[in-house]
Length: 373
Image 1 (cartoon, rainbow, N blue to C red):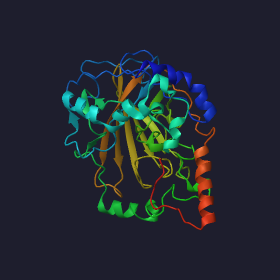
Image 2: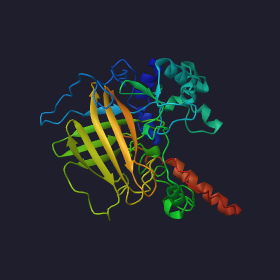
Image 3: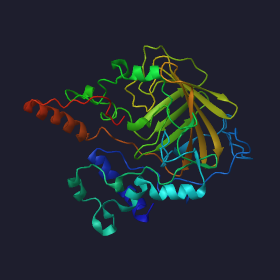
Image 4: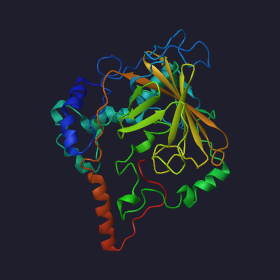
């Protein structure tokens, strides 16, 4: 990240809050360990099934738990599923460098709006192009993910094709109103409740809060706080806090939290979290029925990375239990509040557009799920 951007991200914090957006990402400079994301390709594990780098011993907190605390980032060019241009899970160094150079997001970061110091990045002149953000305001990551010493083309590792294994029955279920396929969230314009939770600033869009917790356009930071009987994961987008009691029982199913009902326990040096009863409006990238569950595992892989694994089990939707691995890289910095609600002019504009359509006698409702969440 350029020196200009390091300075600007701090300098525009007050302006962003005044505009109603969250403070810019705390990731800063890649690779130098000074106020930014610490990205160091990890040494390989001793053997394939290991959850720690070869010879690594995780530090301990005063009450004995492995130390997962701190700020971590999953920002990268890697996404949940594998793009068709990639034929395997792992890229060589040369393949990753080529894919990174060709990645549209990275090209946009380098060329969008001819960003130069003298251009006046904050004067809003680009808004006439019809979009809310130029590349100055986003921080999706600029490399593919390095997980356990290898460059990855998808978070999904099983099935081997890197795709979500919907069953035929699951696809049919998702196409029904019960699966929100016929009239999805974000399709109506009559009131705020017809919009998705992400648009309404209730949860982060794109599944950032999870589970599983996925990378998005910006604000891909997570702060882990530990105590003897709870773990809290503060999600930068949308300043969600996952409060996970340890060695506890699940809550009554009548309670249907946006990010699900999570409990955790330790298996050796790995924190295991089981989540059920995920609210379908919660914005997760993963669909579940009421019988489905997600298991997450957090292991301190090295000084600079937490290995984050997830598995999704829902026989009503999927032909198998499917699994993923994510590298969460250390961030030397703090997470600022993403104050999405303050000045959420987008929601006002959406509903005003609906009223304009009413006056013209036009039905602009859309089929399916178009919410960012």
